[in-house]
Amino acid sequence: MSDELLKLRNEIDRLDEEILARLSERARCAQRVGEVKKGNAPFYRPEREAQVLRRLAELNPGPLPADAVKSVFREIMSVCLGLEHPQRVAYLGPAGTFSESASRKQFGSAPNFMAMATIEDVFRAVEAGNADYGVVPVENSTEGAVSITLDLLLASPVKVCGEVNLRIHQQLMSRADGIGAAKRIYSHAQSLAQCHEWLNRNLPHLPRIPVASNAEAARLAGEDPESCAIAGEAAAQLYGLNILAPNIEDDPNNTTRFLVIADHDAGASGRDRTSLVFSAPNRPGAIHTLLEPLAQHGVDMTKLQSRPAQSGLWEYVFYADIQGHQSDPAVAAALKALSERAAFLKVLGSYPVAAI
Ligand SMILES: O=C(O)C(=O)C[C@]1(C(=O)O)C=C[C@@H](O)C=C1
Image 1: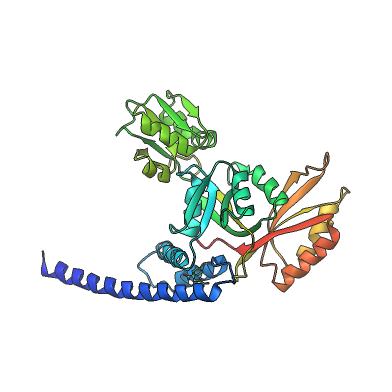
Image 2: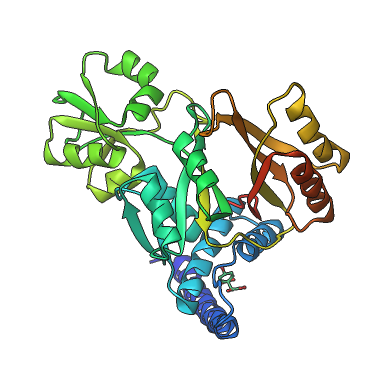
């Protein structure tokens, strides 16, 4: 080994010891935070985590990219929170789905993750107190809204305390080393649709077989080297498959937004969003009148979406996301005025804008 390499490795060893000592100090500090919070739950504070990640990304002197700094500190806070109090996080399973990746993106690797069979089961687990948090998909940039999540948000007492945006990258995977012997491709119907141009160009002859989830597709491909699956990287790792073609989605910006649900929402972080659902009286111009207070108080709306109400033919409920926290004076005033005009208004929760 050259003298130069030896010297540099000694320097890295010294720095690692320093980092470890500081990490242990931080962990002990988090344990004391946990003591202070006892009897004053929740332990998980998404607004504080967002502030920590944003601050460090701003302070970052390089050469590490900001995203790398965030994911290192994401994991540090995950294990610190685990020392304070272990968390249970329910998500739409099975293991290896994009919902699991979204849950880990938000919570790191420390919690006990619980794979649920349906989105409704995620809501029920949180409502019953069997899970502390739930992660559910709410919209996809190409497929649109996830209606069942919107309906459950309206009906359930849970609150929204966070959001996660996950880039959806589809991988072609198999037990085999190459595509030559492949006879079929399994995937969820949505993923097959998201890759259909790539498939038409590259593998037009292979039958595409829709199955219940991408993770199920990967499991099937793991049992049979003549089958491929289209799924996320997490599923390839879980089932020990080789990625034969990476990122084959037709739209490289394909993103799914997930919401974090709990029995409480989040405190203000300085960059927040508030989700609402309301209904408009059934008369001309009603929606315009309802939204006027937002403009009057300078509150920006980032999303507005309608769904037929369960109550009657041609009645609609509206789901809106607005910028700011419901404790911000302008947001509070706009919400008060909106509630006076709406037939019905439910604030689903305020939470930090996704920090990673
Ligand atoms: O500041 C807190 O409230 C903490 O519990 C500490 C900490 C952290 O490690 O920084 C851990 C968990 C919380 O979700 C937020 C932050």
